[in-house]
Every structure is written in structure tokens, then in C-alpha cells.
Image 1 (cartoon, rainbow, N blue to C red):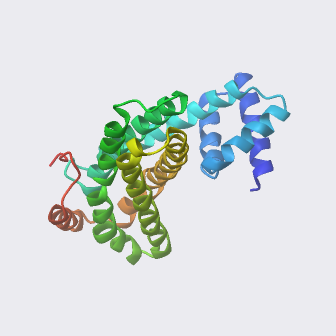
Image 2 (image 1 turned 120 degrees about the vertical axis):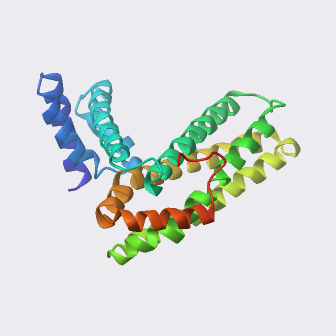
Length: 250
């Protein structure tokens, strides 16, 4: 479906939601349309809806219905597996990574509004960069343990693309740490510009990566690998690689 068609669909959804349509029906349709909407298309959608005199606030209400639906799906995934399960652990680690992204976004907003470098900013930025880099064990467990099993199921191109994204994200996170180390020696305008570019790229790309793993890849893993004994073996191999800076529940 082309973007213009999705905009028309979303406009219709918003209008029916405002008109009192059943929330359950709106949720089902929102899931179908937003599942194919890339994050970078949201701005185009909002422009298209504005041109059609559709309230952006009303759009956000429908988006919240969709988010509630996704959260319910994620809760169901968590409930379907034991606390020791590799997928459960990876979901928990994603929660921590997302909290770090929120903190990075907040720090970037503070810097963009500032007129000079605050003394504490380089240290704060370095901690956030180190926390993001500490997720390398998470990525390695995916690449070395879970992804190969999915490749056997015929989605090798998908997991290869996700692994490639790990490499791209790793370079961004290393650049962020380097920027923290150089901050005090840079002109503030240069630092602010580079931080804005890096922070936005990391928040967007890593957030989108986690979204696709949470709602597409991990559910696929549970369907494709139903054997609990195999997951027990995969857990043992995950233990050998190690975990992030916080310990998972065993």
C-alpha cells in the first residue's frame, strides 16, 4: 500500500474514532496500518492529515490505542516464557536500553537549549555512551546464539540485516563516547551540533531496531523454535557469552 493510501486510511480511522466507533475495531485497523508505517514516514503522515484538516491530537489518540495494543502483545510474550528464557532476558535488556535512550534524548535537549557547555555534561554523556556500549553482550548473544537458529528457519536475510544494523549502531555509539571525551576541548557550537546529529541518529535508529526485534523478530523466534530443550541449550550458550551491566532474572 502506498503512503498516500495509508494516510487516507489513517484519516478515516481518526474520523471514525472521533465519531464513536468501537475502540476494538479501531485498534485492529490501527495495528494493520501502523505495522507498515516506517518511523521516518510519520512526519509525512502528519502533513497529509493536516492538509485534510484532521486533528493531529486525534491522530495521537489513535496512535495511543495502537501502542496499547502492542504493549498487550509484548506482555503476552513475556507471560508465555519462563524468566530464564533468552527472549525474556533480551526483552528486559531492551527496556534498560530504551531508558538510556530516553536519558540521551533529555541530555541532548538540554544541550541544544544551552548557550555554553555545562561542567557536568561530558561526564553525563560518557556514562550514557558507556551504558549503550555495554549492550554489546546483548547483540553478541543475538548474533551468535539466536540469529543462527532463525536463519535455519529461512529468514537468513532478515537476521543478516539486523546484524549489519548492530555494526552501524556500534559505530554511532563509539562516536558518541569519543564526542564525550572531546567535549571540553571543542567549541560549544560544534559540540552542540555534533551531539544533536549523533543523539538523534542513535535514538531513532536504535529505537526502531528494538521495535522490530520486540514486535517482529522475537515473536518469530518463539514460533520458529518451539522446542523448550533447545532454548535451554541456547540459554547455556548465552551464559557463556555473558550479559549487560545488569543481571537478568534466572
